[in-house]
Length: 254
Image 1: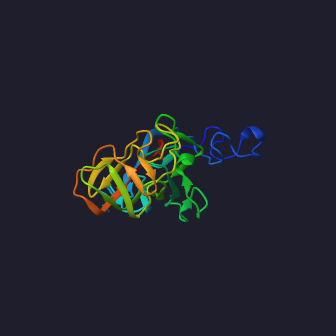
Image 2 (image 1 turned 60 degrees about the vertical axis):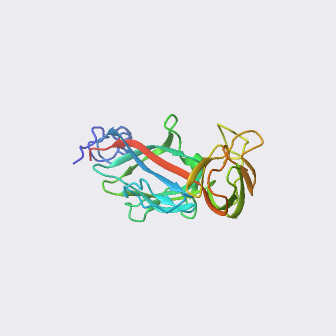
Image 3 (image 1 turned 120 degrees about the vertical axis):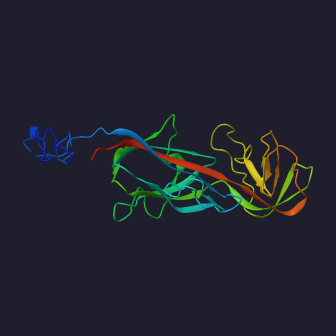
């Protein structure tokens, strides 16, 4: 059981204002503030626009899941052991993505953004070096799930034409080759696929990032090395987005 706040003696009112306002120390809860113990949860890694669908090896956190498409809904992160005060958010991904996060244990499935929307990853997550702080930390109860719906913004799957011994790849069907510019380092202004891994007929290659090479149009791209498989006009391809997101904060004693 949580101890009573030492400032308001548990009544939740500020004694320094004549009990006319909530206690500033416990924010009106009447409970002693718990600084907690450092803890971090993570979803993933999982893959969108993967070559094939794969079930998660650790379903509680969707570790190892792969989706042969751009969306993955109902990704979970299980809060275990103690209530968790979420204070910072972080993400690492191949490409940008959008996401809607929810507290599945709140009864109504409280969303952290309008329910019809997903938020761009750059507006919600920082990095391990510069984590995104929450303006107000949020407490998840014990044994509840954080759930999330994800949409990849840059990868793709489809069919292409390739020739043995040639680095040239031609689009046939499915997702067009992505000619959008990379939003930041290491190659700002160049097509976002340049330097990325591409799976062709089940074998991984790298798209060239040389000047004037790489993705040259929505239907043509150049590999960093010659294609070594059998010549084919119907070779499946995928440029995948590997995603992992982390919730950093503290475990609470009660």
